[in-house]
Image (cartoon, rainbow, N blue to C red; front, top):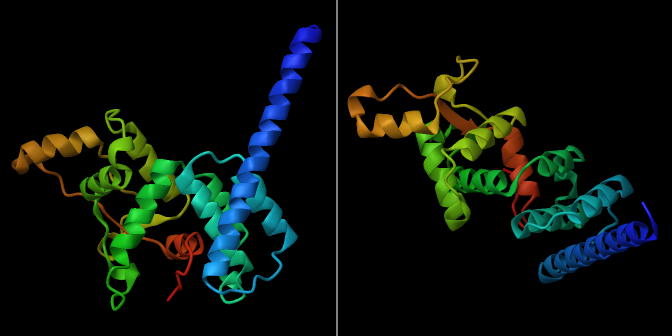
Length: 219
């Protein structure tokens, strides 16, 4: 390692600092715009939460997730809903990829369309239904990989406690392992279609997604 490599390393560090600073500026612009449009007088955000959100958002280059960070911070500064923003939501959001966050958002929309129905009692459907929801949520950005990304998405959402068994399947401790290829082959041959485990959105997921959106009020 000589002077040239040290100079390159210093240049890269400076570039990273600039990129992070730009994302933090964008974050605060989004937060201010949200609060201004709502006519909200922002309140100070707890330092622990403020630093965690701004630091995480500064390295987020996906627009969908960056918007979620902005909404989380805006809600944390809104005196009417700030109590709904929990410190551990930061850790959950950090562990979601963009495709997983979009799937979760789509599932949230699906179970909150009817305000008169209790979301906990609404089934999200089986793994085949979630596969269709995954493709719908991610649109043209999805690259078919045999379903690996989708299967990982389901595993991660379960691991984080964001989806679980529907009320009718609550007695099942673990869902059966059924891959996308199993679903597609079963669709072609309806006689061989297995009885599929059904999922529902958890209470944690409902409040987490609400906190990552503006003007969502937990029921």
